[in-house]
Figure: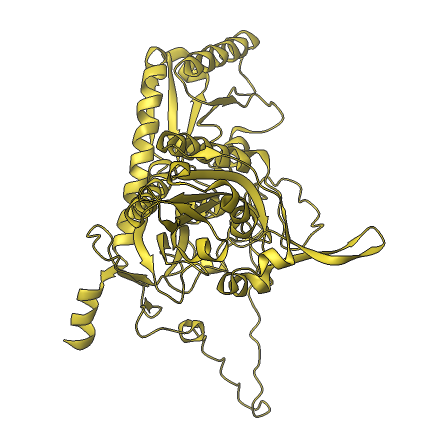
Length: 496
């Protein structure tokens, strides 16, 4: 696989690389009392580009920059001048199928096409069902925040100030007071929490909203990874006691791990952010962090924050206890975004395009009948009929199927088209397969092929899809583990 720092993932989901703005390292300190949260350091995978990213001492991004050696000046050239060598002409490559590019109307804002949004829907259904089972309810709060409310929590607003977008005009009229577009919803929701929570009987209050937010990023906007508008869920909860709040923080963090590992086949590590990296105004922040071996860098996957009583004191979220005394609520907030899709793409894609984990693939299998130009019409008709029959049987078995019967493209072109889109399995049916009563199944992740009898297709495909899902996670974990060291092992190396 080519080095992804210089590779653009060619896909209908992306218009440019997801790689360029990965965080320069993950500062994962050990969460006190939680033995299952492991502090780690990421290391690069191939000398001389071996990078070790640690919390202490902190590394500046410029320390990780790899300089290329300067070209040597040619004899007789002006001192300091560099003569460029002529590059050999490249052989013309066969053009891969491309989808038309959309016009960018807003820099840093991107379209989620149906295949991308379908992945997000799989994630939302899984997570929404899980939090509802915990007792969390969905709600919706306004998009706009007044300036005085946004400024209520000083540390919080300072953390987001550079990213806040402001509405200053209504038509042609300047507004008396500018209104902020939410970068996150603490300051929108908590004034209402103060009205709704008066007694211990009003607790816990556990709400979540599925929405969009705007953070006016000016650095390297990249699809899915860092954009000015993105989709997410944000949970905001309030409890009477600290132990209740902290238990939920870890319960949600485990759900985030499951989203990445069970749905997206992306291994992650749970941990606690340093004070410098934690959410603005939080008591502490926990995180799941993924790793992209091709770049030697970690990336934040999702965060679950314990806000402590900081926000409840600022917004006067106070309640009467069972002992008839006054107390401030303990609060949490937690969020997962469409960045999940970008992390999945970077973890699994190759030089052919996307590689989709079956559980979130909009289409899990594509049937491609491959008649020859000399194939008799009756055989061709039988092939189309058998394709429809197999598609129906697979649908009954719960497999998401599409059929490519276009006759204006060659089989090779079709294979390339669906490989580019990452469909986990391809079912080929040709004239010889019609004679033998079988099909050929080709895996997208490994390229391995197997022959399966018609009668066994509907039972074999679900099993193979489960195997692909497990193999993709195992393969990604092997790559991650090869680049991971514990602080203890690092200390032995560095200190002796």
